[in-house]
Length: 116
Image (tube, rainbow, N blue to C red; front, top):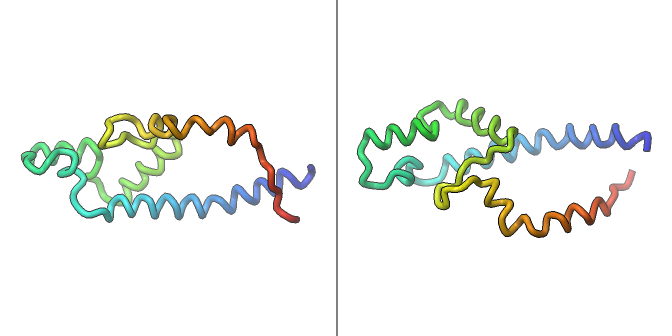
C-alpha cells in the first residue's frame, strides 16, 4: 500500500507524453483530411462571405498552433465539440449507445496488476 501512490504518480507522468502524442496525431489527422472544412459545412455553393464567417465561427481562420491550443484546452475541459453531421455534442453521442455498458466496465474494477 505504501508504494501505491508513487506507482500511480509515475504511471500518470508516463501517460502525459502518450496523451500529448495522441492529441497531436488526432489534431493533425483532422487538418490533413482532404477538402476545406468550411466548404463542407457551408456547402459548395456558399458565398465567399459566408465561408469566411464559417471559418471564423469554427476558428479555422487562426494559425494552426493557436487552433491546437484551443483544441487541447477544450479537450481538458471535457468539451469535445459538436458533430457536424448530427448537430449534437460529441459528448452526448458518446453517452448514447456506448454509454450502456459503462456501468458494467466500472463495476468490474481493476482485475490485473503489473508485476513489480
